[in-house]
Structures are given as structure tokens and as C-alpha cells.
Image (tube, rainbow, N blue to C red):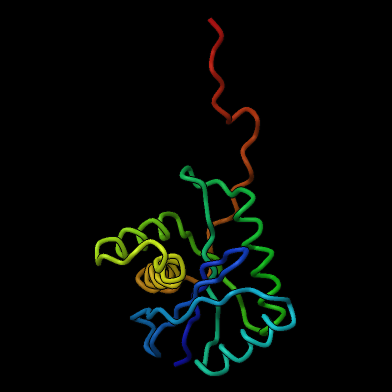
Amino acid sequence: MPRILGLDFGTKRVGAAVSDPRRMIATPLEVHERTDLAQDARHYKNLVSEHEVDRIVIGLPLHTGGREGTSASKARTFGTWIANATGLPVLYYDERYTSSEAEDALIAIGMKRHKRKGYRDMLAAQILLQNYLDAGCPETELPATPLADPVDVDVEEES
């Protein structure tokens, strides 16, 4: 059975994790420093070929209440680009708190601050992918939640 690639998107670095062929266990894979679109496309084409990937799951950074913001929009744009670059289907999965979980785990093992940055993205990708695997690898996602309407924003009442 082909594997699934999980990506924790960032504007400078993208953390990656890959599932085992049985799609039960996510393993941290790498942190890719983004360069330019052509080199990044070659990198991801090689990565999906080398690991026999048939789909990509990208972490969708949602607000605490579940709404999508600017970061989620950037992740979706990246997802469209990587789908075109690799020819693979891309799914999005809620990644709330994965980076803080990863950071906490690295602190717990005593990793120094300057080393944590790279590992955090890779570990966040693993947590994201493991959550997706544990959910049964859903092939659909919840509909996108629009950006907050001005009505939804809390405003202090004037006294």
C-alpha cells in the first residue's frame, strides 16, 4: 500500500513526515528549507517517488474557534502548487496545536532552543500525520470556514 506524506507548511521551512505502508504510524522525515519554485518542485517530486507516496496531507492552521485565516489561505495556495508539482491529490487536515505539542516534546527531552527550530517543524508534521492516520485517513475534509465577519469580532462595549 502506498504511503502518505504529511507536510507542516511554513513560508521558510516545510516539515515532512511519512506514513508506513500500512498507514498506521507516522515517522518524521525532514525539514525542507524553501528556495525557489523549480528547486522545490524537483525536491517534492523526488520525495514522493522515493517514498512511494500516493497522497499528501497538508496541515491547515485554523484559529482556535475553527475559522480559517491568512495562514490557512497560504497553506491552501501551497497545497494547490504542490498538487500541480507532484500530480498527487492533496488533502488538508486541522493542525491546531501541533507546533506547540512538538515544542513541548523537544523541551521535555532537553533540546536546546537553537536546535529546536528545525526539529519542531518535522515533529509537527509527524503529529499532524499521526492525527490524520488515527482519524482513519478521511478523504474529505470539513468545508472551509470563512474568515471572521465583523459581526463575529468581540468589541468592547462603551460605558
